[in-house]
Length: 120
Image (cartoon, rainbow, N blue to C red):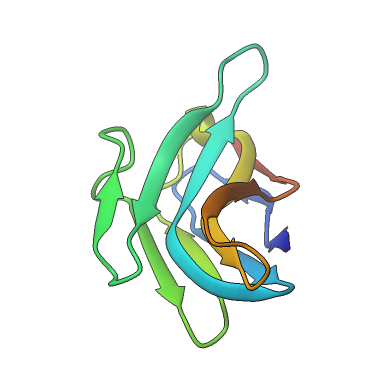
């Protein structure tokens, strides 16, 4: 199983950007999916998560600005980021709870991360 994130980049403060993350491999099912971020010198923190049924949960610092969504037909999770601030600058990592066909349990997988830089 692999998680491939894409869509990061450089954006001005107040701008918008979307990132996506696609899961691939021998996937039986995907439970919750999410996005985390890690800024230089800081711990990785939760940004948003979404259940298999589409119920989202957001960190307070992005609520009202970011929207998480998923397309279960494509095994993909999206993060639409609006009203970006310089403090949103970080590497964004996707995360998913996945059960492989060969397993009778699920576990969390991480994507490789995609850099978002917000200039002031």
